[in-house]
Image (tube, rainbow, N blue to C red; front, side):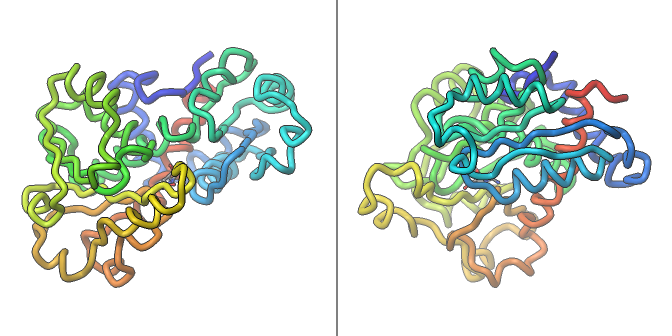
Length: 304
Ligand code: NCD
């Protein structure tokens, strides 16, 4: 039985295969309509979500399967004091596969140790978000045609942004990637990601606070929201929340081929008027999330 807790749980060849399957689903959706007939996905969301939960649920419906679960821990026995381990043991009696999101780093790992069915980490605190990474890799492949050789800028909350940590980890296995880390001093990439991922893999990276200059050399700009819910005090959040706002004016000076990704939700770090710019990929990216999750559910359920 396989789980997806960390993006490195999948080999590079498996990720390529998931991307290929997702592309095939996009081209031939009818071929997949009954692949998970009779199977049940449980979505256990102990933390808010729109795209991740609904794309998982839509993915399962489009594979002909069923969905159970909760979208608010307050509506589950967690509010009575049940542990994650007990909840998972019970739900794994009912469902064939579980996607869970939890505010505590490591909760999906704990879940995988007691679960009788595959566990998918749909985001654990400020740590990891491997299915967003699969989404991002599919999006980059579709927008750019390849991943090797790209210069990718990450802008915003690199400290608490779990999507950033997982995507940088995944990129460590591609060739000739250049990473540009754009953030305020207080929201820099955690030291552990720098040491264990960037430096350990001899990746080329720079850190800067200057978005306008950094943008000039980027193939992809990955914007992120300042993660309000991870701050200890509101004053710090309010001071940092508008550190970077991508505007139409700014984008006029950016390369004509620079793709803008964002895992969403956006607060105000990307001006709404930018949405019609062909370089704005974030809504296409959200759609990619459904297809790659269809491919992942099939893989973990060992559906051919
Ligand atoms: C991200 C997350 O939950 O980490 N959202 C998502 O899953 N698409 C990013 C965020 O909340 O800012």
